[in-house]
Length: 364
Ligand SMILES: [Fe+2]
Image 1: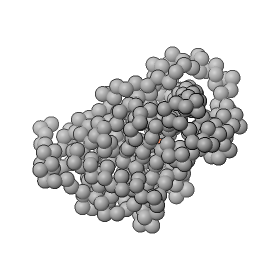
Image 2 (image 1 turned 45 degrees about the horizontal axis):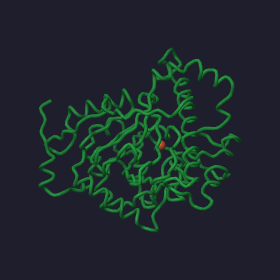
Image 3 (image 1 turned 135 degrees about the vertical axis):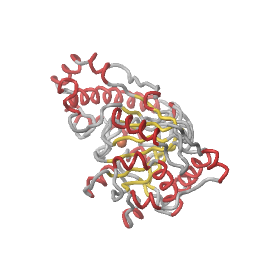
Image 4 (image 1 turned 30 degrees about the vertical axis):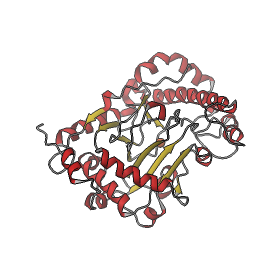
């Protein structure tokens, strides 16, 4: 169980975007993207948005982040949120926000419609910001049956903490039969090993911060992140780790049989799975199947990291299950939106000059 090792090579998951005459992803791109989604559980669509279109998203997000009455998300790490290490908040269903979401959905219709019918609900439209000193989330799966999207509205460096994925760990009919019927057990072992390393990484970092590192701790922050009894799945909380109160990673997961399996399977795990961290350029959009193993890393730079995010259900979804993993804005809860609404809504648009610049007709 050594250091947390992460690859920054995302080339195997990237599709350079080309649009057709109607401004949607070309058929060739759609086919490539679907192959990536099915094979790896994610696809990285580079240059989906022009700089000006990404700026529209960033402006909407900034307006929400600067609003003292914004609607904060609860699920990611409440402690990080309360100490302003992260600022995850949902975006209101205003016409500009719906227009930006509509532009993304319409451009990606060929891919999204393969998984989500028109009547399927939009679960969340949100902005995910992380600051220096945030914790690295544990590797986890989001509630299943959802397609999620991150849009980079600025360049995101590896230091700023673009999302980490474990490609090929999504769940589908028969996936568990892979690797001699051991696929899910091996994924779980890999997750346990990675989360042990994340626990150590977070704890070391917090210790460094407590000694006056780059991001000084606020009064009470160390105790809240290490010994608090409060629910938070993504802190190096020793108390909750020992008491087995953290569903993502706790001492209960490190029994003698698991430790033996981790030792025996260490080479197989290295061969089968890799942690891959995104560092998307402005305008890149990442789509992933919600049950793919992933985590939001810590921001190790002084520059805030922003993502625009949206999630759409692939099936009916029970309300409590929905709210366990996603934080819809009260305006979205009061007036639900489905994929079809966004496909029919007027999309946000940058200047005509920009739009023309982006439009490319492809010969497949
Ligand atoms: Fe997640």
